[in-house]
Image 1 (cartoon, rainbow, N blue to C red):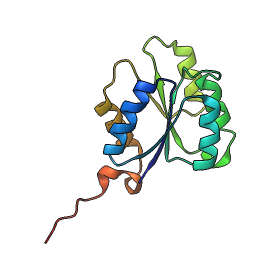
Image 2 (cartoon, rainbow, N blue to C red; image 1 turned 135 degrees about the vertical axis):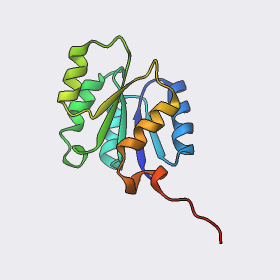
Image 3 (tube, rainbow, N blue to C red; image 1 turned 180 degrees about the horizontal axis):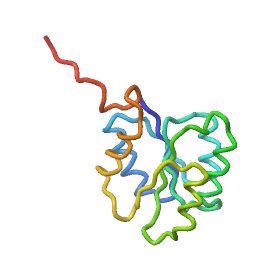
Length: 136
């Protein structure tokens, strides 16, 4: 089961994402602050991280920079959750620091997010790539 670390301060969004991702076959851990998310990422080594840029206490860009200092997390794909109004300079800096992709959280549906995650994960870690068992 692929592991997703979700870092967002938005509890309603986190509950909705967790429920939908779990139904899609992912194991999900949620952290509401950048500091807690960094600690959990170091301990848990997720397959994919979803990072809200607007975290309390530590901006998402600073979280991303800190993640890139941990050798075993360097290759973990980070999906940024951004607001449509985010300035392009900040987005470009995040991409330069290794964010793999981004989604505009104020306009994308849960189904869009799940579909995006399934395109990122390698087939062995992607729950949608596992063939269904057929009874004989």
